Amino acid sequence: MPYTTYQSPVGELTLVASDIGLQAVWWPDDVRALPTGARDDDHPILVQTARELHEYFAGDRREFTVALDPVGTVFQQSAWKVLQEIPYGQTVTYGEQARRLGDPAKARAVGAANGRNPLSIVVPCHRVVGASGALTGFAGGMDAKRWLLDFERAHGS
Image (tube, rainbow, N blue to C red):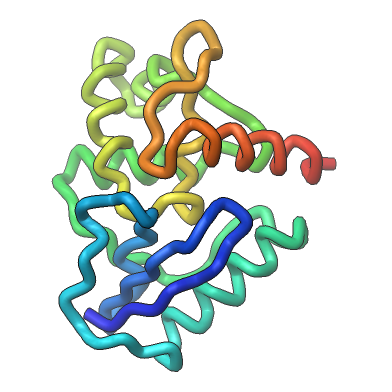
């Protein structure tokens, strides 16, 4: 799969694409972040993703429109779809995300699915918090999650 890197305010991200869409946004310490394809800074999906990330970090974009092609189970895919419906600058709990999926008892399963989300930031798993409102697991680390949430709140109006 073709890949490129993107320098963001929260660290260097590795962007991976297929011919269909964006497959991954990996953090530097993510063990899954080992691209198997060739670097391609001109791949149309990667160029669009980098442009949209730039607009997001400039405070000018609230939703991503790049085509997506994440790999996951049916349940993971459904959990990730709910993530895309969380409004910019807002948060929901894992329990609320599970409720939106139709089964409030699946909060732990939702948490596990979110932990496998290959499209950080673009599919905003950073917008999910613990039942008490506390920040919980995030592939980019707690500092990045806090930064993203604070950034969105500051640019949300």
